[in-house]
Length: 467
Ligand code: HEM
Image 1 (cartoon, rainbow, N blue to C red):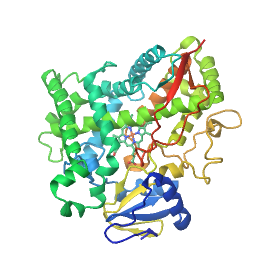
Image 2: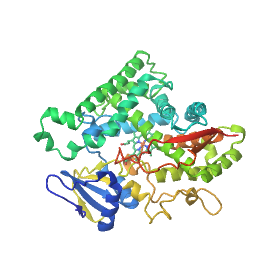
Image 3: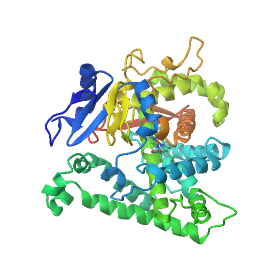
Image 4: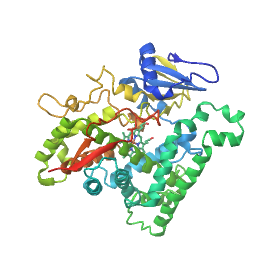
């Protein structure tokens, strides 16, 4: 096995300061190199602290599964949907979703028009708070959710939609306690020692079950509405496509399609497509406010390439090298998760000269790789120029860069996410300036409420309308 921290038999190594997880990983890397393990509770977690090892592992079938932790599974075994599922369910849902998202316009003009519409709505909303210090508006979440919800359910939410607000509040409350909920996944013996009512109280099992019911009701309602108006010859969105798939594959023994699975799949797309995107765009606004000289350069390029407020499309990307470089630097520097989404080995295998037994959790030290001096000069600095050659042309640098993961489970919405970043950034910067409150620089350290995520702290920005 790779070297690392074993700790004690039942507890493994539990640090007092789990909040500084990144420092622990850097320390382990210094002592043990690019592959090391950390036993947390009864679980052995292997960390890959090198881009090439991540690529090697995650492109192989042996590393393709997810652990069936309750925080992923939502107390549904086997896991449904695409994010947490394994085997045939995952395979079928991943292929179906990729095909659907492609058919529904991922990377095409129909999608771009939808994203432009949401970005323009957001700018109008930002204008209403112009000049006043305020945190990033909830309107950003709504615009981002609407891009996904249009593809999945063919609908938009209003900025003030109460159902959406309630849904988001529930997701937020779950995110706030995700590290507490994960405790029994690492210390399964606690389940035997603690009576049910204490488990529910301490590990928020009640909240998990209540939220599951709420989410499923929300999505089942939408599925019922789609069933009532379904036209097989004219599928409107992903839910229609899935309902047709259930019918068409009724007799196929390999089919895993069901209405319950559809509810989980729509949940996965809704949450993965909105949380990461909102967080990335929030970081983008924070970096713009922190580095006004970068903002000016991006605006100058946009003004030149897209005169008089012409809206950007994907074809403009190659003519916007500095903007592209800026967006890549946002992805590198913001690294959403310190630790990548965990994978699980399907069989006994080997990696980097070590044995990795079946059932081992394997993950990447993503933020550390994004700041590794082996791949990046001045890694702690925000430098869009690192993505440009001497002639100012964008250079796609793959080594050391894995914001969307890598390999078989690479982010299903990567192309959608990149499109959203381009369209939202150009439309926002054509009309608005983003600044920090005078005399008060933004605190760019992560929100300590979520030790495993690199989410931004809630702070005021000042948005003004450009001359
Ligand atoms: C900037 C935005 C985004 C970032 C940084 C991001 C990042 C990631 C990462 C790191 C993973 C895990 C990959 C792995 O397990 O190795 C992932 C998975 C996933 N993402 Fe994204 N994502 C983004 C946007 C989106 C969007 C817009 C969608 C919506 C369709 C989406 C849907 C998913 C899904 C469904 C998975 C699970 C894939 C699987 O397990 O097969 N993501 N994403």
